[in-house]
Image (cartoon, rainbow, N blue to C red):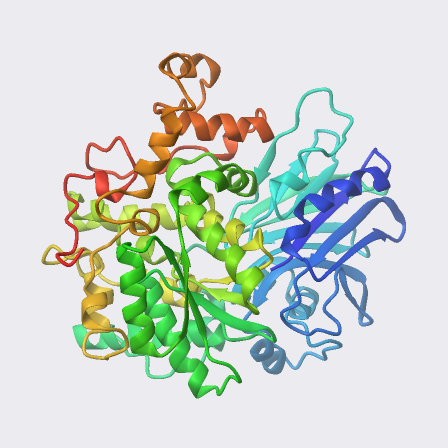
Length: 561
């Protein structure tokens, strides 16, 4: 996890512009570098480092003697860098995983380079010999990147939008700051005056396609065909493979554990593989919730079963309410379910950062979208509709759950790892027949649960535990966290303010006091940037006025809750 920032063709003095780079300093607390580009006085890179791989040579922009004309600034982890290095017999100068980008680009060009990377990444690559600038971002946008491009060719890039909001440019009208599209790369011509011109934006990978790097992946025992037992075995093999490759780190590894199916499978597999790899420390797992929260109770059961060093962070609604404003500043979003769910994750990340030495944090994001885990999937009119909705959710992860997971952890200098969004695992799961992936016998994520049935990886009651939204499960069944939040907001926003919301915010007009409160807070820090949230996350196929699972008529809590 790092913070990357770059300018090409700035009209303003760089020493003034670079103060904007400090807005993303939380992403890399270990070191900072600001570097001008030789021969292009108005171009520069800013980099905030969180040291995870190669403690000695890890600073960026990365440059190596073999390619003195290449400058690389990237945020991410390339899990197959050693395998590709050996396969293509590249001569490395450092131990950095990111060096593979330079060699692949030199040999194959930008598109093939991006498609061969198995990992999570956002990169800015400058080729001064050919006067080109390249941007790229991983398939699901697990690592964030925003760009600002003016009509006269000034390009500014940052890991988070907040690093661009105060950038000075020569345009009279405001310039849009947009998230860079996941699974895409963009090519710019670099002019002698440092300005750029975009001439190609293209997709290098989509979640439904087998990734091109799969041929270099050694997940052994993957069978052919859709026989149930073959599929179940393949799911286990590819999931374990996804966790195993993410063990690449020189810093301590931990795992978020809500007690739900997804984080429990991740934590259990992680503990198992850490023992096999003989890591010199026990895996720490982390849960957050009120004393009587169903999540805390379930997480304890899992931690006892897998033998992790378990930490429980107590959550009070008062503490959560106090954190909302900070959370919205980090998120750069006013989406209701995203804000609600981010509060717990933000406070948990704060605890991990301040009270432990775990830095690389595994989590269960992406599973609900991939395996049709949301309760409203029970209402899908057909298996085909459910499968299409699953892909839509995966393509929008960078606006919602992945955004939440990145910003809440990065806010405290932690690095997130999400094995459910492994390219090969997701491509395989999405290649399965639509009927196979649909809820079955009234149980969502049936196929995933069934694949681990009888393995004793996690307790059976957790394996078949119903879906709880993270923000709901933190508090008791009697009263959800969002109810406490809404009661507080009731005293902050009156009916008249809500009536005026449509006039004040014609785009994505908030329809509830909670929505208005979040939007007002967002506009306070990011005025006129409402397009960063293109729409609200909301369940489909059911008359829903609130994104919480507990408000849906089809919600049925577990009996022991």
